[in-house]
Image (cartoon, rainbow, N blue to C red):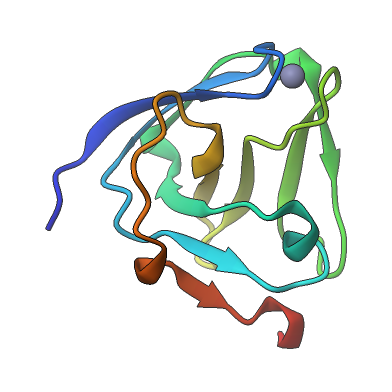
Amino acid sequence: MPQKQDYEGQCHCGAVRFSAHTDLSGLGDCNCSRCRRLGWIMQSMPEADFTLLSGADNLTTYHFNSEMIDHLFCKTCGIESFARSSDGKGNVMYMINVNCLENPPKVDREAIKHWDGANF
Ligand SMILES: [Zn+2]
């Protein structure tokens, strides 16, 4: 198993900043109507491994379909650097947009899991 490391990321303008403690071993993308437009690569983690460093008051939320996921966007630059959801057992989960990390890690695109969100 890869080791967990501390990563920092932000939206485009820098108003929204976060840190994440993760091993980036579960990278995924999704073909649902929203994700295919966004083109993000996501990594999920429990709430304890995610910290919003700044920008809480600069976020706006978008919901669609089952409204299970809080898609959180920077009000200034429009970038969704992370989303918030539940694991189905009542635990808060965060999904970071790996493309928003500083010094983005080299992503092995072959290893990305493809969620068939279009057919959920
Ligand atoms: Zn921004």
